Length: 208
Image (tube, rainbow, N blue to C red; front, side, top):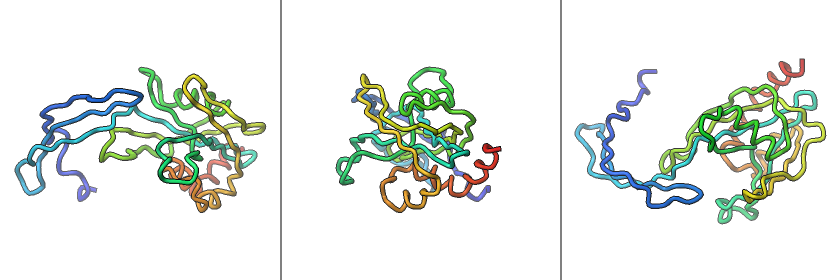
């Protein structure tokens, strides 16, 4: 793997100035920096805006007895200009806004808030940066065992502007879901494609 190791690390970046010109629900930083070049020397001064987010966690609940998955649907402002409906079908997810809270504890809390769901065993699916060209967000995705009998309905914290619909779908419909274009966010696609490869293994393990 040495041929794909990066040539540089964080010490090869000089941050000249960093400020936060915007702080609202999210924060945007402005950085002036320079970095080392592949052919030697240093770049000129570069200015970059950085969308600052806390670590995020998402989960795909799975009932191995019923062979069912749970997804949630909610309004997303970022989808307004991209699709006929800005109500997106996606994973349960949350941002780590409590100091010291473990990722697994966060995702259990979010499952209760967004779907009234208790999660059992969890296994990691992936950890990645959704858009490192302009954001420092890092997202961890889990598969979780859950009892989905009677699951579904409308949930969310009203004081946080949440209005969330939880939907239970058969795991046999994953190909249909992906082909429909309704699941067009990265975390959900990653989780569903992963489940196509590994879901049967975990169904056998968890179904006993």
